Length: 208
Image 1 (cartoon, helix red, strand yellow):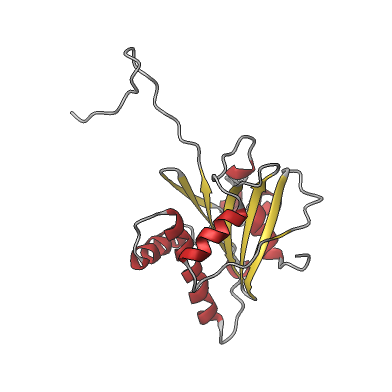
Image 2: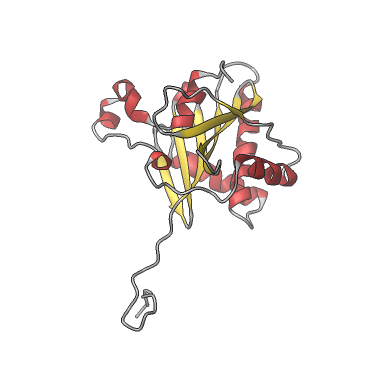
């Protein structure tokens, strides 16, 4: 996977600070954070990329993911294993894996909006894959509900180098680099229990 597009390599990291000089002043004034999955102790999904791909493909035979191949990351100080899978000339899947266990820390899909008569078709294909990824993790969503949810997330993240929204144990991420590529990612988050009260039970918010 040595000849991956630059936009994909950017999406695999989702770390905008290295490119901050290219940001408009309004975006540069508030520093764009490093992706949470890069931080020490960041959680993983309880599966390897092979296990994810097997389950995903079983549920989405019409939108398959080919085998992920490792990306050369000798200059990467994050101590993660990165891999990518080419879906088409304008659509790539990528991931970052915990070294040692191989468990997934992030799953990303990147669409490259190459101008031309096929752009609309390639965009529709990208949206279909992104919606399928949503449905894989948010069980119970119908195809229409997944598309609506995806559209809302992409709308909120439009024009932003890093946008995230947390729901339950999942983080949805959008990295919109305009004509350089659009990335949608899903990542796990740590869930913490509220502090226990004196009886040893967890406090719960109550309505009055």
